[in-house]
Length: 149
Image 1 (tube, rainbow, N blue to C red):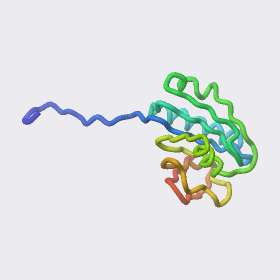
Image 2: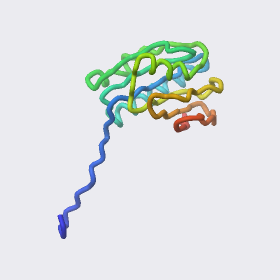
Image 3: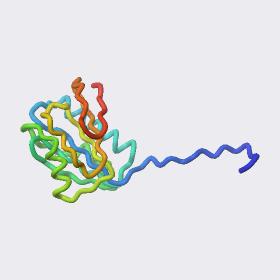
Image 4: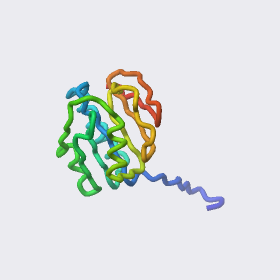
């Protein structure tokens, strides 16, 4: 409104469509790290209200895959069943997404950052690496965020 005293804020969407969250469950991940990861998953879901979440537990391979939609998301943390405990290969997540033809809007990887030199390079979507545990590693692709415990 020209000349109006009414302020109309620009509305910004606070919702996304489909996201994939990869949770590192390798042998270097203990209960404390896993609890931090699941807390982050809850915060992500509560803050951005995705239409769909593929929650994927990985170590040297994908150990479990849980799918949630907007109707089942409220029970996600209480019903999730983490699996894994082997070596660490982040490319297993990347390969799994491709094999299963999963095409999220973004991929969020939760890890301690210990896992060799191959972080994958041909992800099907932009990747955010969230690293806990004090490791100052910076992923060679995507964006890296360090989570303080």
